[in-house]
Image (cartoon, rainbow, N blue to C red; front, side, top):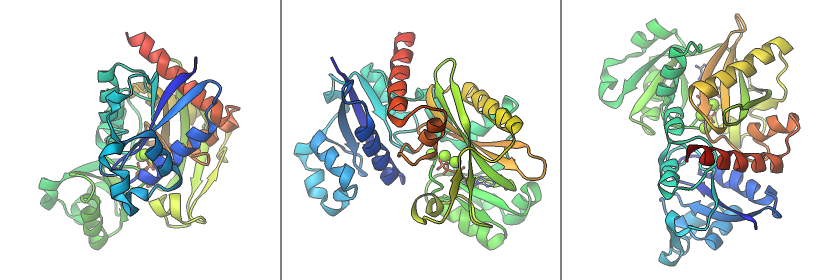
Length: 347
Ligand code: ATP
Ligand code: MG
Ligand code: MG
Ligand code: MG
């Protein structure tokens, strides 16, 4: 008997398109002899739609916008609870609802296994502020930061933050991904503009010390004894950071070096640090752990953890494991096994 997998994707975050692409790739690559897949799309307005409509979104992610009436037709709308025969859920929804504990809570209520971290871990890691507080308290090096909330916005000026954090700072919505709402500020004007932009996405904003260096990422897979992949490095054009445009739009924007051109010793240090972060944040299944490698002293600075990282076949996560000898279909297979294992454990 085949295992029935509920592949949930889409969602109302700014990372809708990335999620559709990840899900489409999973749908195509999954071992059909072993699994039967139900594509279950969440539209951008938050409805879950039936299998046929979900499949249509794979090839035309914007169908919902182009023909909202057809997609969100009452006849197409379903509830998660309608899928009682699903054996395991595979959420590949990035950002809010999917990566922040909300969907995970629903799976718990339905008493079904699901791929990826549980409620607590996804909720914490979606929040960059809480993630850093916990990591720092466990001795992990993070960039210095301050929190600006919507109602305390007037207390903060560029002069005040730059005294504490240096003249270049990063401004980020606390709960976001794919660099949406993130900017670099170097003066009063860019600071005010950046804050306003970040507040479009969240009520809580981080202003962070800029780390002068390169970004490196590690993929982690497993439950109690997880394995870390090799290290990947991202190179962005001079003076730019890994912005949404560099990630998904501009082909020449950023290049991935897998493995990263760093020493074996440093590679091992980064991998160990990734596993430590994974453990501290009580992750399970998978995560991609992002660091900055500081130019001045080669120190590794933990930036953030992505509980449901991009999973298109050209994404960093699957590519890192491919290098470690785990193919994309095998990775899917492992993730489903880990989901079941955790579920059986917790009962
Ligand atoms: P994703 O989930 O897609 O990885 P995100 O939206 O969660 O992205 P971050 O990874 O925190 O955002 O930041 C986006 C990018 O901004 C990073 O990849 C890095 O290039 C740059 N960046 C973020 N924080 C800093 C910092 N403190 N110093 C230097 N660069 C930074
Ligand atoms: Mg992120
Ligand atoms: Mg993310
Ligand atoms: Mg990141």
